[in-house]
Structure formats: structure tokens, C-alpha cells
Image (cartoon, rainbow, N blue to C red; front, side, top):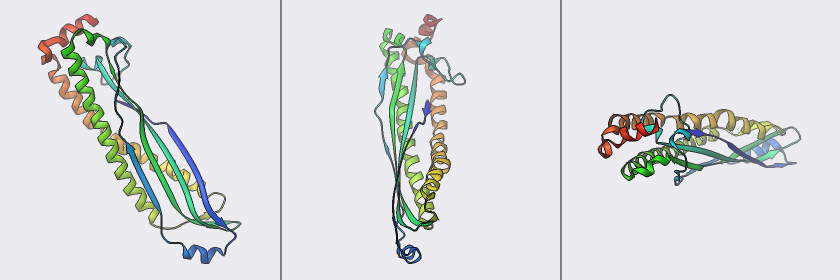
Amino acid sequence: MRILLPIALTLASGICSGVDLDSACGSLAPTAEVRVSFLPAAAQIDDTKRAREIKFDGDKAGAFRQLGVTRATLVRDVDVRLEGFADDRHACAWPKVTLKLSVRPLLVELARELEANECMRVHVLEHEMQHVAIYNASALRAALQLEQEMRAHFSARQLDGAADTLLETVQAQIRERWLSRLDALLAEADREHDALDAAEERQAYKVCDGALSRMLKGLE
């Protein structure tokens, strides 16, 4: 499974200015808000390519993997808002962070040659749908874990800094720390995908009355 991670980032500021900053900052309630959500995706099936046209990870492309692959493109939509107070130079605020994760698309590619053997087509599709299930489950776990960690971090203390750069500082944290942390959480599922493929390689030649051997000869 290959995961690509484009980013959409939206920032806004709700900082009020023209107030006595010290007293205003002291009156702010500790109200950092963090929401991280994942919208599970239904797989799209593409069976228009021949086996040789499907691109695979060269390190993991066993015999069975010539016939199907799952690709996921995770889109991360981040909205960051600051609510607080500012004077001409300084600002204090609590962040409101919303991170929405979605997959566009979650694509299962099946070799066109599978049309010649319905048993093998069903078997390969079932295998790839297990990858889809792992991906959706792991992305949901990652979203929940990331939300907990981000909420703890941003709730620890009030943000304070230069009025014209405070929002940029939060933006940098999101990009450099938290989206990288999301990548690491998602990567934890690699072991599950690898274990699934390894198990399949051990028994792939036995299913459908040994159809895989005959099919691979036809691909040579």
C-alpha cells in the first residue's frame, strides 16, 4: 500500500485588539480546543490495467502482488483559529484546531487478467479489501491518538507572543511537529500490511486449485 499525503491548510485569527493586555490575558479561560477526525473511505475498484501496467513497490512485489495493489491518498485539511487579545506588539490566545482526515481516493487496482478466473479475482479482491480495512482502522486510531496528544499540548499553557507572528508560530507547529507525528502514527500500520502480504504469499499457490501458477505463466 502506498500512502501519499497532500496538505490543505486554512488559518484564521479571532484575536481582539485595543484592550489592556495583561488584564485581558488573565481573564481568558483555558479553552484550547482540538478536534481530529477521520472519514473512512469506500474503496474504488480499477480493473482496467494489465498486470504489467500496475506499478508496485519493488521491495515487496511478490508473485501474488503482481495481480493487485491498494493505494491510499490521505488528505489533511487543517483549520487553525486563535481566540484571545492583542495590543500593537503582543498577543495572548488559546488555539482552536480542527484537523479533518479523508482519503481521496482509496483505490484497489486489480489486474485485467483476473477476469479469466473468477475464483482468483474474488480471492485477490478479498485480500486487497483486508488492506482497505487495515488502512481505515489504523487511520481512525491515528486520529484519536493525535487528538489526545495535541489537546494535551495546547491545553498546557496559554499562547503568548508577537501579535503579527503568533498565528504563524502555531502554523509551524502544526506542520513541523503534528503532521509529522501523524505520519509516524500511520506508519505503525505497515507491520499489519506486511504481515497480511507475507501470509498471502505462503498460501497463494494453493488457492483456486493452483490457478496462480497457471496465471503467472501466462504473464511471462
